[in-house]
Length: 120
Image (cartoon, rainbow, N blue to C red):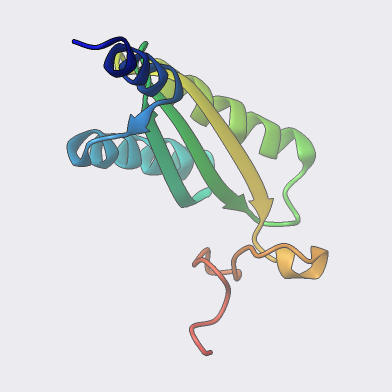
């Protein structure tokens, strides 16, 4: 193996590769279950395989009327639940209000579906 090839392999291990389909399905299902348990809705899940395991990011939504303590609890509960999985070494959860259009952020409608209404 060449030095260049070895170097490229090391960079890929450090920066991560997209997670495989099976890993993504498992992480998405876990995130959905954990979010449902704390009254949140999952908008998006991304995961990358790093040298140590999966690094996961979850974007979730909660009602804008939810108190800060409740949204913080939801975020930490989802994070801890994901990191308790053997394959996951790092998880980050972002919570946005369902009616975040008011704040100028692309969020969700009150139904929890991404982007608000289905009309263009």
